Each structure stands twice: as structure tokens, then as C-alpha cells.
Amino acid sequence: PHCRSKMATGIDLPALQKELKGFQGKIDSWTQRTVSTADQTRQEHGHRIKDLQGRSRELEAEHTRLERAARALETRLSEEKAQLLAAQTAAVQAAAEEAALPILLAEQRSMVEEVDRELQAQQSIVASAEAQNLAKLGALERALRLYRDRLGLHFRQDDAHRLLIGLNDIDPRQPEREFTFAVHIQGSDTYSVSNVSQELPELPELQAALQSTGNFCAFVRGMRTAFVAAVSRESPP
Image (cartoon, rainbow, N blue to C red):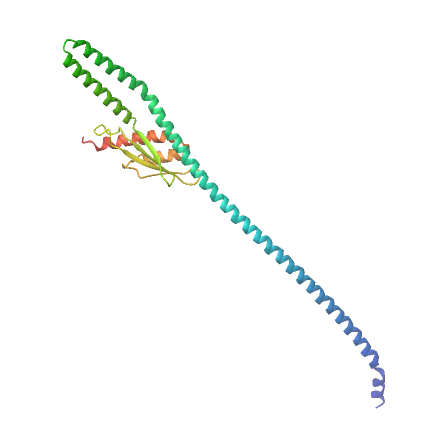
């Protein structure tokens, strides 16, 4: 009994309770600071998320705008390339006409000289001379028309920005026979050839050369040569 009384009197309960309250106050203070810090961090994180979401929407809008601008630019480039092809084809036609002019003049001069010789030789027979003169003039007119037609190149552009090209004076049996093909521009500096009226083994090589050099005049000349070869293959041995 004496020992139990001594142990009981050795514990200072009020002091212990005071110490526990002190610890509890420190824990409550730490908990409050931690919760406050976490709440502030959560708010800052929420603001940052909103800022990032707003920036993301701005970037998406800018991306959409740039895509539309790129599509418009591609369409414009395609149209301008089609116009360039038309101009190049016109240049080919003009060059062909210029190259053919000396030959045409020589033929005209030869025909006129022949008519003059015939007229001088038959002055005594007026009716016959007039008939022959009319015949020669008719032949001259037919020759002029035929030579103009045999320049053999015409073109037009359709609504799909394709250049439709027609060539004649290729088949000697049928000079008026037309050989046609179409050239289409896809994207930037990309050509495709379609609607070729004859099967041409040379077409892949010609198209590859057009893609690599962009020389449309040389391509048209190559197509004419290929059509001539195709007509030769049609002829019986």
C-alpha cells in the first residue's frame, strides 16, 4: 500500500493534461496551415488550368485559320499553274506558226509562179486560160486552208482546271484526224495526264520528264512524236 500511494502521488496529472493540450494546439495549428496551403495550391492550380485551356483554344483557332489559308493558297497556285500551262501552249502554237511561215510563203510563191506560167502559156485560149486560172486560185485557197489546219494544235481549259489539247496532221491518211489528251495540275508542280486518245508506251517517260523539268513545250512536242509513232504502228506491214 505504501508503494501504490507513492506512485500515485508521483504523476502530475494537471501538468500532463496541460502538456497534452499544448501538443494538441501545435497539431491543430499545423493542420490549419497545411489545409490553408493545400487550398491555396489548389486555387493556383485551377487558375493555371484555366489559363492553359484558354491558350489551347487560341492555338486551335490559329491552327484552323492556318489550314484554311493553306487550302486557299493551294487552290490559287493550281489556278495560276493552269493559266501558265495555257500560256505555254499558246507559245508553242505561236512558235509553230512562226516556223511554218517561211514554208507557207514559199508554197504560195511557187503556186503563184505556176499560175503565172500557165496563164502566159495559154494566153491564146481565153476560156481555157480563165478556167485554169480559176482552178489554180481554188487550189491556192485550199492549200492555204489546209496548211492553216495542219499547224495541228488547239487547246482549251475546262472547269476542272484541266488543259484539253488536240493535235492533228499526224495521220497522213487522215490529216484531219484529231489526237487528244488532257493535263491536270494537282497541288504544287504536280502534273497528271489523262484522256489520252491513243495508247502510248512513251507516256510514262514523257510524264516523268514533265514532272522533273516542267518544260511543257517539250512535253507537247514529245506527245506529237508519240502519236506519230502510234499511227505508224497502226499501218499494215
